[in-house]
Length: 111
Image (cartoon, rainbow, N blue to C red; front, side, top):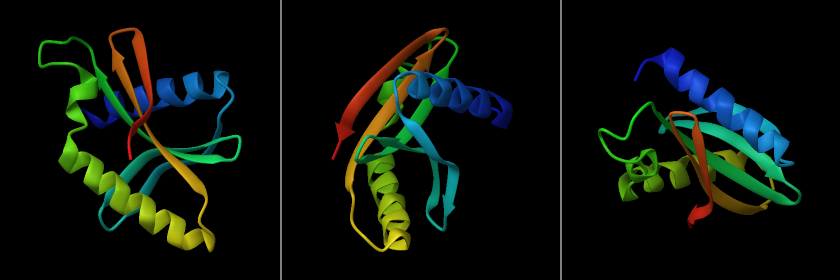
């Protein structure tokens, strides 16, 4: 996937989540382990969001792309972010899958 397509998917996801009442805290948060697409606030819950965009399901669902290895990396990056805060908030890991024009939001996709 190109960076511009990835950026488009993240922008669609961010705008969608904001319509659902979440507040954007960070976009493309960089760590030595990689990047978290979105960090959002859902009332008192800090939400780490992985966004996967695909124009077709030819290679499977975008949600299937967030396997255990990717989940482990996201959790590692989340620990890095939380360490910078100085307190430990309640957290959740969500996945947004965008397939064509359809948006699939999985709250609490993994822990």
